[in-house]
Image (cartoon, rainbow, N blue to C red; front, top):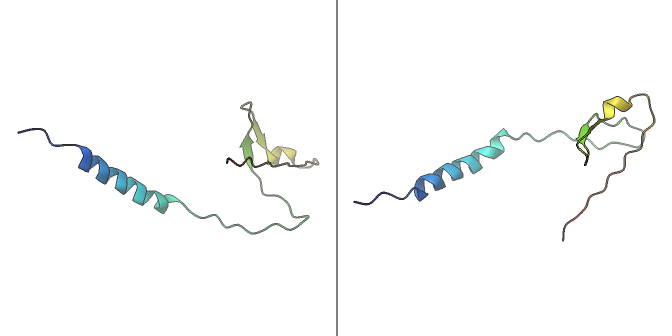
Length: 72
């Protein structure tokens, strides 16, 4: 007798993982901001590895530029 293939077991485990993953994701409530509204606090990691937090800019004037690079 030969050894059974592990493929069915691996397939079942992967299917369970992929089917349960969305259960742990919550959709964040997102209200559109109006001009003049305070931006929500966030923290970003820059290209050089340093972090930027909007909370550090409290009381200072800041301009946020966001560029989305689309692939294709």
